[in-house]
Figure 1 (tube, rainbow, N blue to C red):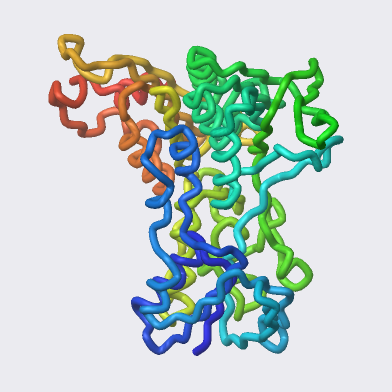
Figure 2 (figure 1 turned 60 degrees about the horizontal axis):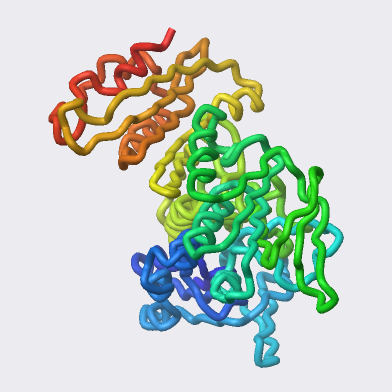
Length: 444
């Protein structure tokens, strides 16, 4: 059987490894327009902020590793079109070559594209995105340029907040803009997002929330020098756009059914409306266990899981995805936030009738020298009382707790089941009255 995988980053790599490691009778061909694969974009800010030694280890595999397993790989190759009826992928190489690849099964792992607002001045030099490795290289080059003093970051989601911190660590004047009233508004309720807002301000980042960027201003040489917002104009020698992403569905838009956010609609096996075509990662819809409906969540973790599911199904082993919660976390200037499922605001936007319980306490008993406060929120449906979300904040690493809440959401656990949960106690780790059970006990 001939399988063609279009796209060779997290999702495509997971699908290819699954096929190559488990189904030796399958012929795997991978096609990607980039010159590299497996880049961990989540590490870009760590590299730019010099919190890691280099970018080299942000690549976790390479073309040669797949060729050693028997795959055929065409890098720096664009897919110019797909003949779905004839099962043929039309390709064009950077060297000018044009060729076709036939398939029995096709896996689309085309990922997502950064949102690029068509504002006045959008064609100026010095306006960058952060998706590809090459874009990270360019941002790092400009941050390293001593003539670049002021940096404007547009979008205060995870990427925007992290790159704002990174630029500030490099001694730059940094302004962070978002039309939302807080940072991280898509993931956290204001009571938690404000903690990050305060930490950013303490770290020297000038935050401009509730402020829409309306234009970019440039000099005579065509380089950006300022951004204009609904409230004024601010200097900027470099602009980093981190507004968000949309699914890249150009290759199959006219043939395949689209779902949430315009992504390829897939079933629990990652199969699209064409039974010989699968879609994985950022270009595909995904099932939300919190919403209990189809949604779109662009995360590397989801990309890997969907790649594994598609790989086994294409290889001949039926495997269903179990849905996701959208678990995520961020660590900036020493403040750690993590969440899973839905915030109160997100649940209400989805039409759900929810309540929440909050609690705050020290992570360890007060006599412990190393300690910090933990703030927790559990979000649950009023009628069913099932847990649909959780948020945690601390300067300590409390991230492992979010995995338990992820499983609770997946299994439809009620908040009442958590009230007397068997949680161990030892002063090195936690308190006898654990903040998880105390928060659950506080639920009305």
